[in-house]
Amino acid sequence: MTDILRQKLEPTGDAVESRVGDETVLLHLKRGTYYGLDPLGTRIWSFLKEGKEPQEICQLVAAEFEVEHETVADDVRRFLSDLKANDIVVEL
Amino acid sequence: MYGRMVTSEPRMSAYAEALRQAISPGCTVFDIGAGPGVFSLLACRYGAGRVVAIEPDDSVELLRPLAEANGCLDRIEIFKGLSTDFAPVGRADVIVSDLRGALPLFEHHIPAIKDARERLLASGGTLIPARDTIRIALAQNAKNYSDLCVEPWLQNRFGLDLSAGHQFTANLLAQVEPEHTKLLSESADLAVLDYYSVTDPDFSGDVELEVEVEGALHGLLMWFDSELAPGIGFSNALDQPPQIYGRVFIPLEQALDVAPGDRIQVNLVAKLVGGSYVWAWNSRLVRPGDSEPEASFRQSTFLGKVIDPDALRVRASTFVPPRSDDHEVDRFCLSLIDGRHSLGELADKLRENFPARFTHASQALDHVTRLTGRYR
Picture (tube, rainbow over the protein chains, first blue to last red):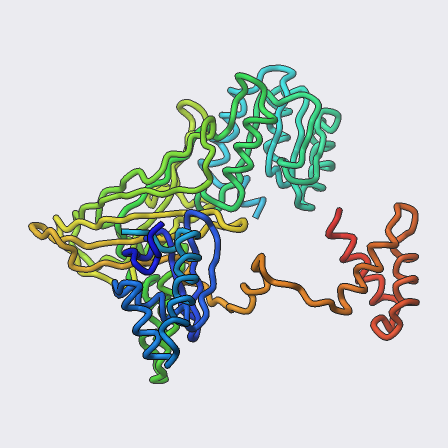
């Protein structure tokens, strides 16, 4: 299976989101399930909505949060995999 | 409210006529969401041999004196609870219900009808209503739109910046006053709910409405036409007498000046989540000759809620509830329930074990009553 960081992903059109402070709450309309994104998740989510690709998101997050790229890559990989497993993001 | 349901015309006369035509002498009728049971009384009057009024609310207690006064107490049974918990001996020849809110897509209406059709209705039996059609049109309503979305959030006489509140109010469905509402387009069918076949409580669909009257477009108006039985029904349209249901206004994030020929494309989703509907509507204004929209909005009643992330976190499957004194109190209380002890006896034992928590006997009794009430 292709590494999710090499995939082209976009937010599903089936979710609506509400920003609450620096967190985000998503509702997947087809599943009827709520998802909460913490501040880092919210940042990654905003990059996804801007159309940025996972590799670029890793670089941006590493620079913004001053964290090792490898650590960020693991976190982003895990986060995107969760989003994809729950149909919050879909592969283009 | 129940009085208004009976006086609401033409709804009530249409229901009565549908019942009269469906009932054959001695047949069985289930009245779901009966309230005080007026449909049940009518069913008896038209010749039903057995009627079950199904209603979880205390209002159904009124049915006993009403049935006695109308000479049909011997033919009426009451099931105080939800129809989905009703397990009768024998099925109904006729099931009558009105579980709608402002629209038929309301709370557990569709799942309840599906369950009733499959489990409670005899083969070849009659459902009243048979079908509802939700209709939608473009609407101008400056007054209600201003009350809902503009003031005080975008303008107020105190000069406060309350614009953050606009996101919420512009995502709420509202009931509007007909006298302030003008339709700017013909209506279109949004959804047809055939109660003999509907299974999915959710709705998703696209509709395109063309502006016919120049004006300020504030939102979309939804209502429904009901067919209770072939040839018998009523409409909740703007030009019809006011009904108990009201009409539902879906605001646009911003008012738009529109002219004949403009098209509004709407994707609308209604999803039953946790017992109530979440609505989402994506709308686009396309001018004549343009291929790209001039304006587009993505809205949802989900955005109309002020959400506390902490309140959601404690409902996640991964959340581990901490032990608390409240749990200990309830655990103890539930362990005492054995079908022999009265509420007063349970309260006494509770107070003995948690004297600091329950300093008065009435506090303990209140607690036990509320706790056991959850399981009735």
